[in-house]
Length: 426
Ligand code: GLC
Image 1 (tube, rainbow, N blue to C red):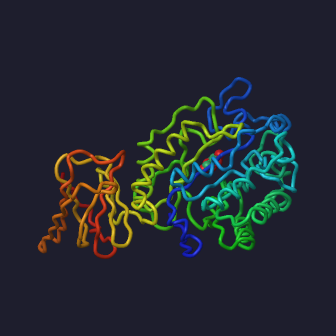
Image 2 (cartoon, rainbow, N blue to C red):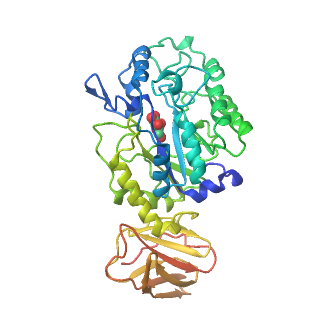
Image 3 (cartoon, helix red, strand yellow):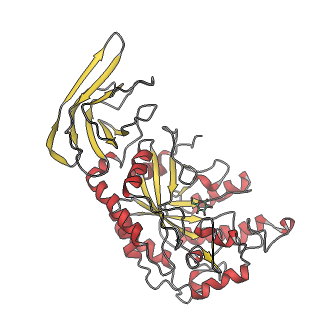
């Protein structure tokens, strides 16, 4: 797997490392339950899972009234969580536009009693807060449109479907609306390319870049054409991956809100995922699923704030870093680095001394982030005969800080590790 590097457009994105995903749409109203039956799958897939006819599903719009929606609060949460960008669903597979679209009346402004454009409000708040904004847009699947992909229950005859027509009358015009009406857009997060051809993916990419040259397109545009790669949902890369990648992750087991899904990942697990992604040079896109009223569940809010508190102390070990220079994971934790620094993100605090083998750089000093009192002494040795580099650190017995403790090593030059898999003592 590899994704092409595109230096200019991706600079901010590489620096960011952590973003917020928001899945919000008509599907947030049934919240995983249709006619008393719970959907076994993802909340936003309820229409597809139960093969709900378009005419029936459409009625959800009549009651969609998110009176508690507060763009400022959502963006502030992203900011407090230490997230640097935000991707919101503007049209998911159900085909409903969460913005004011002139292409069809099947949108939040024209079809709901609420009648407002939340994307406008989010764009304004993101600009104010300095959060980069991106739009999720389902380019192939559209279960509301006879020519879109994926709805085999209302539109049974595959031969009658004209995807080209769909691209021309809905997908491309809606992308134009999104890229011309909301200020600078930083990512179009395409998803589930399905049977889209290479030529069609190319056309979409060109369209995005023509309207906004700096806007990134996600790997799921299809046919390997993304500006960066998108790993599978909740996928953790086992080692450093070449190129630029992002992994989208759920905070429970669904993207869109489901009343019954209370399987929230703990703060500890979320932080482990964040540092594991950073340790591979991969961006972590963590999702929240607001309710139909427009509220981000308290359980998500609390967790994100705790992650943000950790980042306030330890953020320098995440933002602007690249993955570990080692070709394998250490069982005590993860490593990130940037010029002159190597960060040891320690998940299992050592009982005795801490030993790191294989780092070739000279270490000038060490400190624990957020802990000014403790001094860490470094002993470095190198055996010319076996070319073994060993660093020993004296760390306090008691783990400092919360969750993941970070030791920063000041090094000479750019981190350089022995590429031989070494047995790590201790
Ligand atoms: C999958 C699902 C989709 C979800 C996405 C998030 O592709 O089909 O519902 O939005 O993952 O990464």
